[in-house]
Length: 140
Image 1 (tube, helix red, strand yellow):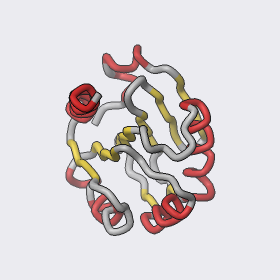
Image 2: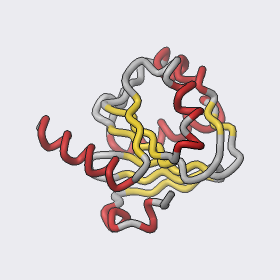
Image 3: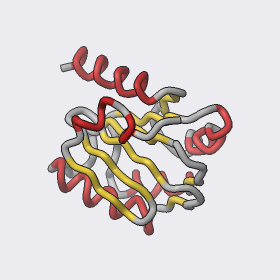
Image 4: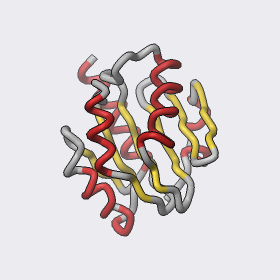
């Protein structure tokens, strides 16, 4: 697994948010998150500040135009049931993708129980980014 920092895409970052629990990278057509090892990612402690920063930077009120890639380069957990809080606050995403190896995909499988839309899974960050770029251009 490779960090977005170590790819050719990093030069295209519009804005980078660095938190004690991980980093968020905003691009023209998508957003990439990289959470640090051992974090238990929750709504109140992590998602709310990320949403405020990302949505604020992008001028989005609900996230409906955001393609989000969770680049799971580290081992961490997500409070999957907190997706309910995301939706209860009237938020949604245009697309949600998880990039991970097979050993880290089990948490994403649990997230599918609470996430209302399709979660796309990729084992390569470049493929995920190119998938979004291709599909965004095709829709536009």
